[in-house]
Length: 271
Image (cartoon, rainbow, N blue to C red):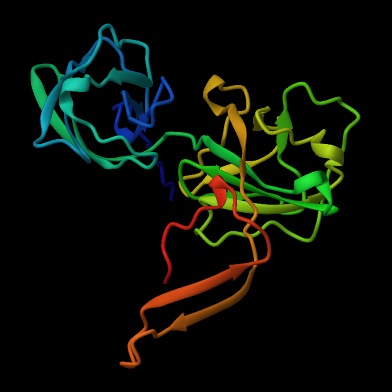
C-alpha cells in the first residue's frame, strides 16, 4: 500500500562542452575551456585530451595543466606547433580522458566557437568639403555578426566631445551576410564626430554577437581600429567603344568623367 522511491545524484563530471578561445586577439584559438557537469574531485584524474581542429594535419594529444581538483571548468593551452588555423569561427573535436580508480573513460565532445568577434575596420565614404548632409560609414567585423539595433550608432571615437551626437538615417544594411554593416548618418559636422585617423571602438552596452552568440567585448584592447576614408566614386558622363579600323571590333573604350581623376581615383579594371 506504500511506494518508496529512491533517487541517486550522480557526481560523475561529464564534459558538457569545449570552447575554443583566443587570448591575444589574433583570431587563432590558443586555448580550450572544458566545462564539466560536476566539480572534479580527488577521485578523478584529467591529465590529457585528444584534439583535432581546422588547420591541424592530424589529431594531437594535449596535456592538461595540473591540478584540476575542485574545478568544473578546465583551461587547456594550445601550442602554436599544433597548426591551428587562424579563424574567427573555430571548430573541431575533442576526446576527454578521465581516470577513475584506474579505469579510463573517453568522452567525445564537439569543439565550439568561443572567440568573440572583433571590430575589423571603420571606413567613411569621402565627403569633399562635407557638402553632403549625410555620411556613409562601413563598419566591418572579423566574422558575420548580428546587431541588436540597426538604428543606433554603435561606435565610440576617441577624443570626440561627449556632447556630440549622430543620427542614423533609416536602418543599417549589409550585403555580406553580417560581416560588414553600412550606416548612413547625419550630424558629423565637418568630420567632428567621425574624423579620419580617429580611433573607434564599439560602445559599451551595444550588443553585437556572432552566430555562436559570442559578444563583442568593448573593454578588450583589440577592438580599437583607425578610421579610414574611401574615395567617393567619380560619376561617368560618357562611355563609348570606338572602332578605328572599321572591322567591327572595338579598338578602345573612351570614358569621360564628371571631373579630373586624382591618383586615388585611378581605374583598376573595366568590366
